[in-house]
Image (tube, rainbow, N blue to C red):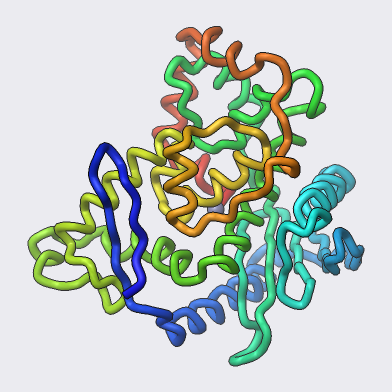
Length: 327
Ligand SMILES: [Zn+2]
């Protein structure tokens, strides 16, 4: 029986699940594909402004432009992300193809789908302009005594000043693209883990413990609820070492760590071990960015409470406003 296991605080946490569940996964992939189609039909209906197929790192990148905002910047960040990974033979995509949608609104996403029943798989990346005020978040973060960020992307700007990026927005675009590529690679590398982690929040959420204790969690997961709770609690704690978003949704833990790794964010050995146990894709050291100077230490030791800190924390608790930009 397939399982995911990791050690945390001297305990072993395990979740067992049914193998494959191919039908369910195939259906979900079809649902996912419909998300793209639905998004294109949404009001206000976005207008296709441009379509191009550059070949980067041996991958045909089908880019559909539905926005002109910072188009050149996004294009160069996308090229950088793909060439950094693919150029070094780090990964292959189905049919060596990636479909990218630059959208004016909605949620950023990355996933693999079957375009029609039984047909070949295809990787999709949606980048949405509906992102929070990154510069403001980054400024607030400098004064955040707890060092907790909602997304890894907010923290990244601080690691690189002054030599890597020109501004927080550019770093955030790149981090977001890596985050979504992280979902795609996770999906390709460990489809069952991807599917289980993606479903687990929904399966557990809203279920009374007593009720759930009598049942297995859906047909997917074999582990009784009582043991599942420990797995979830441990993962939540580990996620807090990455970002708040990583602790909220387990599928996001993988993508947040992946984008952090690519951007040179330092993680503990424990974080990486668990990341690999969850089926996360480990990029080679030589394709990851390097932090500059002592920015991280400045960040750790230079922080202090200010009114901005309090407003940042207050905004973060509100959740949905900051959540909307990413998935
Ligand atoms: Zn995500």
